[in-house]
Length: 398
Image 1 (cartoon, rainbow, N blue to C red):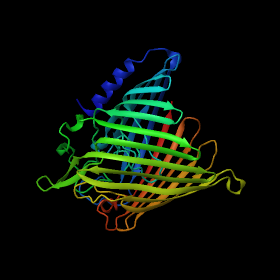
Image 2: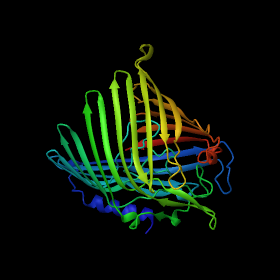
Image 3: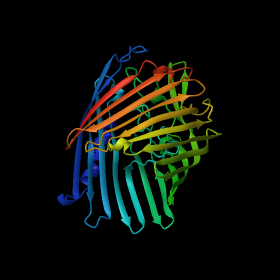
Image 4: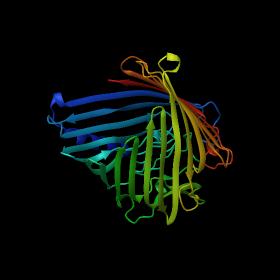
């Protein structure tokens, strides 16, 4: 059965299990049209030329019991791409059953979990696989099968995770832009752990608030979400290997008036090599500038990763600086602009981005995103130099 077929079947099974109490069932479908424009000629053979379009079908179905102790959530996602067959795919972002009893919460099924406080990169965010078909920054995630048990107490929240099935990372095909050269052969995947995608991962997380500090601590053991890509001369492709990973990490945010001070970092062992990765920085917001009602934030972060990239995944943010700004108009249309640039202090590679969003009426959202690259001597950024892109997305909510 195809990936789309499996997603549709699982979604139908979960949906069929939802009790049909109309007053407790909330359906929110979404339809989006997306266009991507690449102003430069493709760098590699067979890549699409200038324009790429997509139709995106998504949304959420949520059912709650009358006493609100039980909840079912289903969030399917389907992208139909006009130019890259590998970017036509389906996923279940969420298909979960949650039950609350006192201070305990139990969730089983497919779900999404985000950890982190930084803007440019989140090294502590380890539960879900990055959906790099959606965007190269990895902010979008695939749904992850899991069993999650949490307990809320006076001194914070403790969560335990069992992840029975590993989700592999998907990559653009030969026709796609924003891809590596050579392409990644997903069928030639290797695992360090003997049970491969069924080996199972475990994680533990503690979060609390101490005065003006938000603190998170975690431990994780399982399979790394980032593959090591090894060139195979026989096929002329890159072959992914998913290594065994053990790591612990911390994320901390201090809030004081206009100041947000952020730090998150991990230390662990992957493929038998120890490593550390961290992001630290601040965001300062100028509120109600000139009495006009809008806010302007200034963001700066430093990114570090000491993996060497030989037997471990090659780090993209090994010694980089991020500078950005966030403009929020605080209007009824929720208008917001986020722009920034990441500069590698060693290779001088540059990644610049800008994201704008604004509601058009009550049920339509306009998003405009732009990305530009200058490779320098960075082997990860250099293949993307001709792939500066402008993305326009119009989403209708029903």
